[in-house]
Image 1 (cartoon, rainbow, N blue to C red):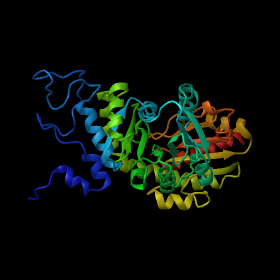
Image 2: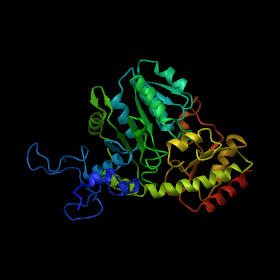
Image 3: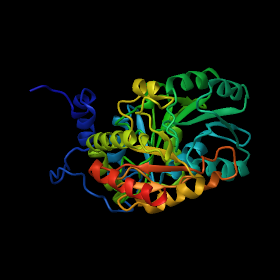
Image 4: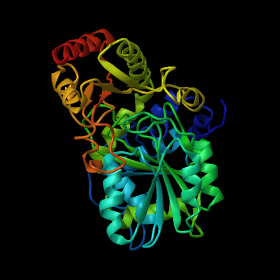
Length: 398
């Protein structure tokens, strides 16, 4: 028998194997295959300043959360992971850990509305400035990085909602040349399709509510980091302190549900991608659709980069319809199988109108998405049924 630890064996394992087994040792007390839910706020100590298994109080650490964080770190090829009560809580923790009043963030203009709101309406009050740049224009990024107060570069790829794929390696090189950290929001791709740390990112953030949880039944967020040093300290240490001191941690029930979802991420993403590819091709043939935004289409401006950087094209499609905002809103309200809702990444298909729903906070700003765009989060239902639903919805409007 080979004398290798489970951890070392997993380092040589594939994605789906790690998703199932990383951090998921059988319970040492009972042998339970599934990690227990440690639904406790505090832990008895054998002595003053002596902890049993390293746990004291669930804000500082909980075995159910530890198991999830081990999964996340393994799948994103990071050295440490931290889970939070929501995706925005994760973003907030990362920003608090790395920024000081007077600092500047450079962010891709195509960003989630909640991120935009956090930076422009909350952090701006505390003296943090944000410069938005085109995700497709490296010159804009270089010019912004000339500002000596820039500490952080924030990138989503694929972007929300126009699905622009951005060259992570190129952005990392530019950020590091100016002593800035690169943070990548990997929510849309998930680690099943893309691992930004291997491409040079210093930190990855997720709304684990989306593909990682995968079942629209849990709210959560996460940060995964590599070996980055910030302010002469490992970034992981700064984030561990911020997670403990800030306290917006994932509870044990939420950590359990997220961990359960993560175990099937690989097989779910395969179906999301397959369905989205079929539907995107079909949408291209509809005369009432002006543009289809999906990286898997050869017509997409960043299709070539998507093929190089990702192992699949994702489950989100955006479409631009004739007839302006009014028509887009009517399409969003006309589907039946596609549920009208914010969020994405669940097994069920969702439809939304980004300009007024997920990106409402960007309205009347240069970062607002086109008002005639509808976003689809394609689930794992039969693709034929989803096409039938979209066809009847378009027929109602046009």
